Image 1: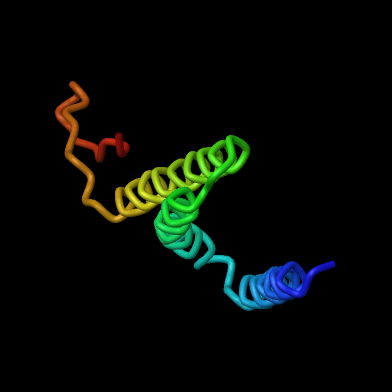
Image 2 (image 1 turned 120 degrees about the vertical axis):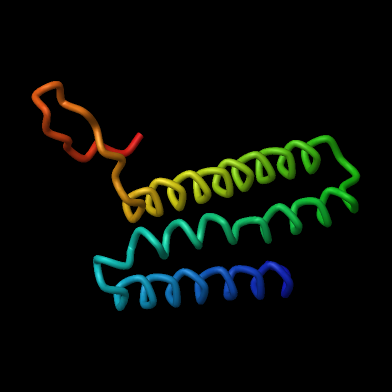
Amino acid sequence: MSYSLFADLAVFVLAVLVGIEVISKVPVTLHTPLMSAGNAIHGIVIVGTVSIAAEAAATGSYLLTFVAAAFAAANVAGGYVVTDRMLAMFRPRKPVETGTGRTEGAPHD
């Protein structure tokens, strides 16, 4: 095992342990905002894949960077969708005419 591979694995394992520790300390009510922000931050992964793709020389490397960029893009889009739905919960409801002379709040989207 080369030194750089061992260093990369050590960083990966430490990142997993820190992530588990941080997520376990967050209250349940804050999981959705944390996840939406975390998914949106995956734009950093896109930047990383672009920089790795610039140095890729083999077809397999291009394929892996494409897969990584696709997953990161899906995560970024998902983060924005979750954030939009979360913020919609705080928008005031539009009044709806019920036909009986009373108005009620309409559900969101």
